[in-house]
Structures are given as C-alpha cells and as structure tokens.
Length: 373
Ligand SMILES: Cc1cc2nc3c(=O)[nH]c(=O)nc-3n(C[C@H](O)[C@H](O)[C@H](O)COP(=O)(O)OP(=O)(O)OC[C@H]3O[C@@H](n4cnc5c(N)ncnc54)[C@H](O)[C@@H]3O)c2cc1C
Image (cartoon, rainbow, N blue to C red):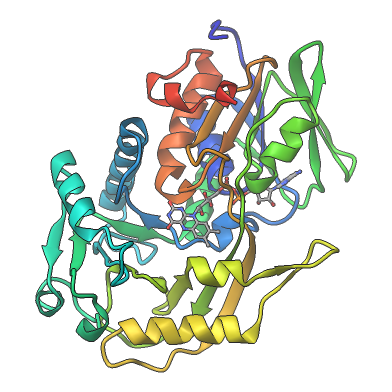
C-alpha cells in the first residue's frame, strides 16, 4: 500500500505528543493540516508522563535503533534550546532489587555490546558521577549510569511545537468533542466530532493515545491493546542536587522544570482502582507510599509533599512494540500508538508526516506496522 499519491489536506486527531509532533512536521512539509483534540492539548498521557528519554535495557534491535534516533532528535532540539528547563540530558541511574530478578550485570553487558553509553557503579562510586542519590538504598549488585539519557517536560514541548504549527498556517481545534473517522469504500475521507465539526481530508492520522485500538475497531480494524491505567505523582518544589532520572525497584523519579519531582512505579499503578463508571480512584496510602519510596532513594531523605497527580491510560500496544503507519485495509487512515512516546515523539512525527505526505513507507518503521496484528 505504498502508492505515491497526492495529499494536500490532512486531519490529525489527538493533541498529545504524537499528534502535535506529526502536525508540525506536516506543516513543515507544506501540507494543509488541521489538528483536532477533544479537550485542551496534552490532556492525555503526554500531560502525566515520566518522559525519561532512553533506550536502556533489552528490546528488539529495530526498536532500539528507532529510540536512539529519537534521542538524537532531542539532542538537536537541545542544541537549539541549550538553557531549556524542560529538556535536560543529565543522565539516568538504574538499579534492581536485591533478589533473583536482578539483571544489572546482564543489562550492563548488553548495553556495552550495543555501544549504549553505560557505567556500572558500586553504591559508593555514584556520588562522584551524579549527585543526590542515597548510597544506602542502592543494592549490592550496583547501579548502571547512562550519561546520554535525559528527560523532557512534554506539555512544554507541545506548547513550543504548536506555536510553530499555528505560525506555519496549521489549524488547531481544541475542545472539539470526541472525534470519529469517516471511512467510505475503504478510504478515510474525514473526521466528525460530537460538537458538530465535520472536516474532509485526503488522509487522517489517529493519535488518540489509549483510545486508538477502540477507535480503529469502529472501522473493523484490530490493534492488540495492552494499555494499563497509570499514575504520575508530582511533588511540591524541593531544593535538591538530584539531576539524573532514577529508575529503582520501588520508584522512578525525574526532576521537573519548576524544581519539583515527578514519580511513578509499577506497584503504585497496580493500586489504582478503576470504578464502574470509568473514573479512577487513587488511595492516599498509594500516594504517600510513593512519596516515601522516593524519599528513601534520595540523599538526606528529604520530606516530599504532594503537589498534584495525574491518572489515566498509558498507551501500550499488546506486543509492547510501537504501531505506526497506514492501516492495511483503509487507504489514507494512519495511526500512531505506542509506549515510550516521549522518547519517540519527535522522530515518530517526522517519519509519519513524511509517509503521509509522500505515500512512501519509511524503512525505519517497517517492523512497526499495524498490519502485523
Ligand atoms: C505514567 C507514565 C509514565 C511514562 N513514562 C515514559 C517514559 O519514561 N519515557 C517515555 O518515552 N514515555 C513514557 N510514557 C509514555 C508517553 O508519555 C506516551 O507514550 C505518550 O505521551 C503518548 O502520547 P500520545 O500522543 O500517543 O497520547 P496522549 O498524550 O494520550 O494524547 C492523546 C490525545 O488524544 C485525545 N483524544 C482521545 N480520544 C479522542 C477523540 N475520540 N477525539 C479527539 N481527541 C481525542 C486526548 O484528549 C489526548 O489529548 C509514560 C506514560 C505515562 C502515563
């Protein structure tokens, strides 16, 4: 389905990082583009992401390559905004639990084989490499420091990208109500929304985060879904020397632009209750537990206080790998659905915009097509 064709008007549905990044890249290519979002921008996963920029640990070679190119695009952006408080490359530090699940030796060997910048450090060596970590919390197997890793504040990035989109003539429609893609005779022809907006287009990009599998199912297409409900806790600003992203057995931590911390973990995610009406309940004990876990791994064990939290779907395809490109059976209907959307946000938008504009499939996305399901 890689027939080159003429595309002059595109509608992007979804105002998270994939939708916004794709929209600005389409505008850069001179394509008339409308971005439609049901609420304000970044109200989905992109507004409550840990957003650690990395390709740490093990995955397929193709996925690793895409993530590394994704990080490269952030490096370029960082060179344009060297003083940005919303994009930092201060490295990442990882350690595992002191039990049979500990993979630090193995992961370190793997990362060295790939040429992924990695240092294997004992607890007492960490302070000389990256500040602010409680050495007593690090397990005997030691930690891996990856100096090339970083983090991004996605709402800030989205604001910058959308300003360029609008400046280039892109049309932004927020609070549009829920959008649905119209398909006629095996071709996507436009988008309608529950607020009565109707837009015709030569191609549609569906970038609605965790809603993608359900929405393509309306057109009898199948994408396996492994989306969990995730929790991100934000602390009040706290004066700490910590700069790296920490990935530890009980909590992941990254600094934020306003001098606070963002926290998440697998166990706290599992404690979120999904109510029968589709709303979520988060226990005070879960939030306090996460704040305590974070304090435990930070030097001096500072008192951390809750500022706010975000809860909702974390888009993850059923097989864990990204889903990018045109649906097999519907001409002009493209999707973007992936975990690690912070790391992939810039590169995925660039490659998808290129595919939509030219009709030519990019080889870097060959392993990530929706047709594999
Ligand atoms: C807690 C957490 C931690 C994470 N950690 C990392 C990490 O460390 N590193 C990393 O790289 N990634 C991480 N991610 C993943 C990353 O944040 C996501 O992959 C990325 O933000 C997804 O962006 P998106 O554009 O696909 O979706 P979203 O940001 O969810 O955006 C989808 C948008 O579509 C809109 N929408 C939905 N349905 C409709 C509809 N019918 N009509 C109109 N609009 C609609 C929503 O309002 C939303 O604005 C994390 C995510 C979470 C939640």
